[in-house]
Image 1 (cartoon, helix red, strand yellow):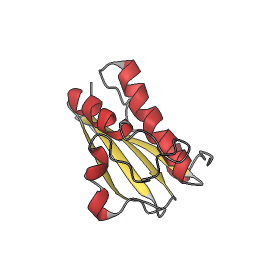
Image 2 (cartoon, rainbow, N blue to C red):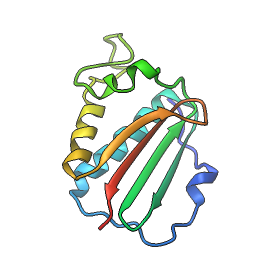
Image 3 (cartoon, rainbow, N blue to C red):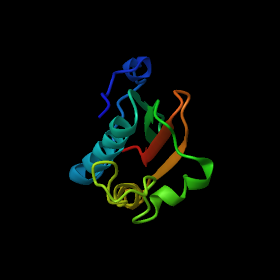
Length: 130
């Protein structure tokens, strides 16, 4: 299991408070899922929060193996697993990211996935600012 390290990006100051409105338990589960995935597949990850007058964005990126372009939409489908092994120690149920997407979209936001400059995956969650 990897460790979560504080990256230089995580120390940036926000220009203003970054407030969102929503179910704290659901939103916490999204952040927890994304951080657990990053720590499972990478040696380190970075977390950054940015905002403007209309949106608050959370970016979680890692230095793991990344996710191929062809699978970046598929990982949000229920029961899809990057690791085809049925061993729960090497992968989850394939429900974490679909549930995260449903929660974020239910809060009026969006979640996206692309390549990280660290070499792995970068998930960005954008929610309406309160």
